[in-house]
Amino acid sequence: MKSSYSQLMQTQYFHPAFNSAIYDGPLRLYFAQFHESLALKLYFMAQKKLHNLWSEAKDVSRQTGSTVLVLIYPSVEFFDHTFAQAEHPHKRFAIDHFEQDLLLGVRGPFEDDELEPFLIVLENEMRKWISSHDIKTAQPVQMV
Image (cartoon, rainbow, N blue to C red; front, side, top):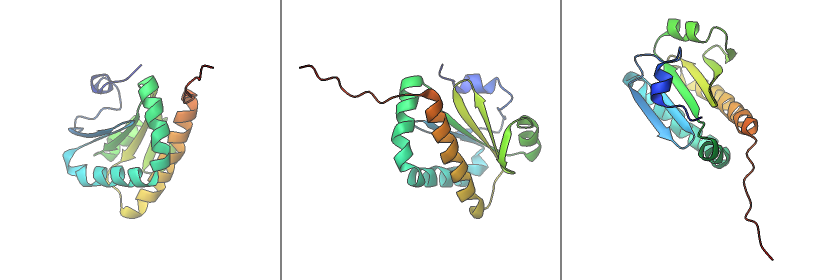
């Protein structure tokens, strides 16, 4: 089932400061307007670093309706409370799932030297997300 913004608003993951978003294929970034530069940096670096993985992720998203949600939280307290039970591969990031979607929480703004670790986590989690849907790209059947 494809989750929507209105469904996300009904969950513990939603923060009222999420007033901006970037949607591109399988990736959805939600953030407060004052985190726009960080969100754009994450988006463009992910596009560059994950370009080979991108087409697979688009296929999964197109076939299942699921997405990769990246939520940049403005409040450390809200992040810590929201992701208390989630996996934390780094003190600034958390991984969880919402319906069929992969959800990555980002704890407030972070420095440029933390971008690469985030992209590594994003890449690894996207690979798992793709595998979990077990989508095979269909090859055209040739009739003889």
